[in-house]
Length: 262
Ligand code: SAH
Image (cartoon, rainbow, N blue to C red; front, top):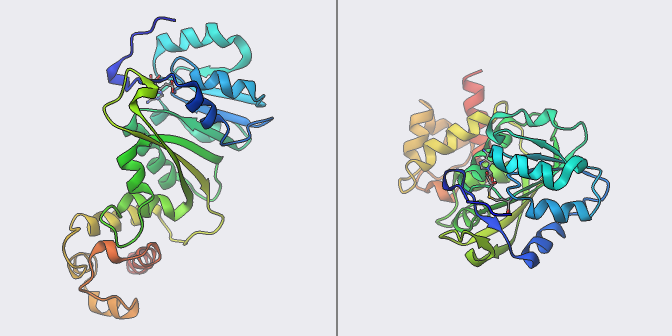
């Protein structure tokens, strides 16, 4: 199949068979419903099919790739020529999905953040296996008190168990991306800190990390007139920096904010 990769759609096709096999072996898809986003030429799809899932749904934005996928897989897969950012993923299947995605890097980050923010009680997936730019994956798994720690890791770790699996070199793709990639595995947490609106966690962490180098007194003052009282109650040292506060502390700050604004 001769394909001209479209830069605008972030097309870097995975051609390294060993890596493809390694990705597929992460999850047991047998008899499960699988969603693959951005299947491209179907390199991963082909291997997923070998493991006999119940069903595979493909969502691919590029119309010409969709036509080729239809020829290649016929009725073995359900192909939708759509933009993953615009669909309602809850309606794809009534079973929990295993999601694979080697997508453009910026989209991986955007969809997972959207999904976390939108998720209410029920998760519509059982696992996510997504490719990121290595640097972004390192931010996702970063721990408190490190310079990488920030909004991304707080937001994602709030509702997900996260495992960085392995790095993938640009040589495994055609055309070669400019940076290293990493594969990250997510499963929903059964218990997570309850707040009323996930948007509030997003907002609070944005206010704190926009002033990453400043002491936390500043963002607290911005959020609360009675910041002194709040910091006493939460036992916060006002001279700490945003990177020194745990996920739990951020959730407690959100709860205080929600109490005031309910
Ligand atoms: N997963 C394939 C292709 C990777 S390239 C492989 O590993 O070989 C990324 C793919 O995502 C391309 O096929 C591109 O057309 C598709 N894509 C880009 N933006 C998308 C979007 N918003 N929704 C769905 N697919 C998208």
